[in-house]
Each structure stands twice: as C-alpha cells, then as structure tokens.
Length: 442
Image (spheres, rainbow, N blue to C red):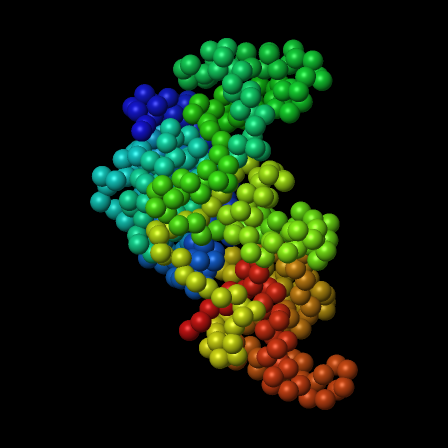
C-alpha cells in the first residue's frame, strides 16, 4: 500500500524535473509509428478483430506528465475526449500549455494521483498509463485503481520496467542510494556527484561500461533528464514477465497483447525458424503465450519496457486467425486500411510508387507493425487504393482485383472467381499480420 510519503517523493521528483522534456512545438503528426501504438483501433482490433469509431470515445492519460502523449492520443483518435491526470501540478500546467499551443480541444487536465481513481465517478473506453506503474510502491494497487475507471469492454495500456534489461541502472541506483543521493529528491547537487563518481571510475569497470555514456558528462537538459530517469529515479522498480502476469492475476485483469507484439516472437531469435532444435520444434506449438514471452525475455532481454494491453476478465474475444476462416466468413468480411495509413501524405507516396510500377515495403510508411519487410507489388497497391477513401467489402475488392488482373499470367486464361478470391485472401492475410490492413466481419 502506497503511503503519502511515497507519493510525495514521486511528486517532488516530477515537479522538479517534469517528464518528458519534449519541445512544446513538436508534433507527432508525421510519426505514424507513434500514432499506431496510441490509436485505440490497434488495441481493439487485436483483441476483437473489429474497427471501432474513435469519435465519442473517452480516453484517460493516467500519469500524463508534460502532455506529449496526451497530444499523441488526441491526434491518433480523432473526435475522442482526452482526460489527463498527473500527481505533479507543474507537469499538468505544462501539459495544458502544450495542448493549447497545438489548438487541440476536448482535452482536460487535472492534478490527481492514480491511486485516487477509485473515488472518481468516471469511466473510460481506453486508458493510457505510460511510464508510471513501475514508480508506484505496489503495482497491483495501481492496476486495481486503473481498473476501477475502465469500462467493462475497455482496454488499458500500461507498462513495467524490465528487471533484466535495466539491471545495470538498478545497480547504479543501489550505489547512489547507499551514498545517500536518493534519500530526498535528487537535484543538481546529486547529479553533479553522480557525474563525478562515474567519470572517475576506470574505463574497464563494469558499472561504467554498462551504465554510462560519455554524453552524460555534459550538463544539459537532455543528459539531466537521462540521469533523473535512470541513475537517480526514485521509486524505480524492475519486473519480469512472470511478475507481470502475477500482477494482472492479482488485479483480476486479462492480458491482451504486448504493445510491440511482433517484436516478442520467439521464433525470430533462431537462425532458421523452419529448422528448430528438435525439442523446441516438438514442444513449442503447445507452449502457452506467457511461457513463450518468458523464454524470449530470458534469451534476449532487449526491451526496456514490458509494455502491454489488458482488460477486464472475460473481455477478450476468441478470434480465429484469418488462415482458419471459412469462405462464408470471407464473403462477409469488410476490409480497412489501418487509420494511420489513411493520410494524404501516404496516399501521395502510394500513388507515386504505383505510377512507377514499384514493389514497395509497407514498412516505408509504418514500420512499428512489423520487424521485417512486408512487400506489396503494383497489383496489390492498385487493388487496395480505394481503401484510402473508406472501407470496402471483400467482394468489392475481389471485383477490382479481377479487373486489374483479368488473366492468369502463365496460361493467359481468364482468372476464375475462386482463383481471384484465393490470391486476394493470401495478400490480405499477409498484410493483416502487421495490421497494415484490418479485416472485420460485418
């Protein structure tokens, strides 16, 4: 259970050094990867294979800091109402200034602790709690507080620091805690001492090699933010995948997906996924997702955040992969471009590639969805072009595909309807894996 003293230390830390220190005029409008993660359509589609409207939705940015993520949420979710809360009054002030500067309306800010949420008579469709949970004395208490204002079908995005990936920084924090530098609220004096200690360590010393960079020696806003967010972060705690699932179980929340789920694929860690060691080849298909994530973390702990979506127990739908769909389901399907691809800028590039008859890596437009290249040829580009104007039935796209490619390229015979459907299904299934296209049932 968090005490007032615990929360006061966190508040003082972020009143002194509001986070993140991103320039007021910086906009995420040209950052489709950032918008992709914060578009609630991404999370709801992963859970339910449906494409909800963002207009009218209520989104809570819990621990909004200086408001950059609130700005991202507002731009990624047109027509939604954004409510930002933070323990730090100074951060809330800067957040309000940021959104006003960008002329974003329907956004409201309040100085409030996340742990006060159970007493708040509010409900939200989506909650973003980014870079906060690992600072709370009790992660389960934090999750329960967030759950109290989440609608029954809502989705919560939050994260924990990885105990494995950040281990060198936890060693540094332990050292500076022993030196008394984290007894109060670390400020200029404590940062000066950290710099002096780390600079004077020999270059071969393990802590310096793993937790120090020469650029931290320079006294400026960027390096100060780094020291406060790593070496002197009061309340910082690391967790593992098993602990993450234990927290969710204790809070009666259901895991949906890692936010960067394509970058947690255990098979990607092997040289030849088609030729795994015999034991893994035989056992892996039956290994639960939780265990696969734990295995990935033990083998390759490169992710600073254990970043995940979750919801109320029982809210996760059982959604069959497209490979298992029947012909009847495909005939009833509606096809969408991901909303973060449906921009005038991307459409112009799409048209240029199409006019030049180029094969294109869709990661050129939005790379967060896939760790590897996802190519599409001019026929695919031309087939999907109308989706920039809105979603279409699968059957309408089949008609367009057949007009664009009426004959078999080998036999020159007219393409049969069944062949058209199979080819288009294969294309859409491949693109849907990275959510470049979304396939929903009517």
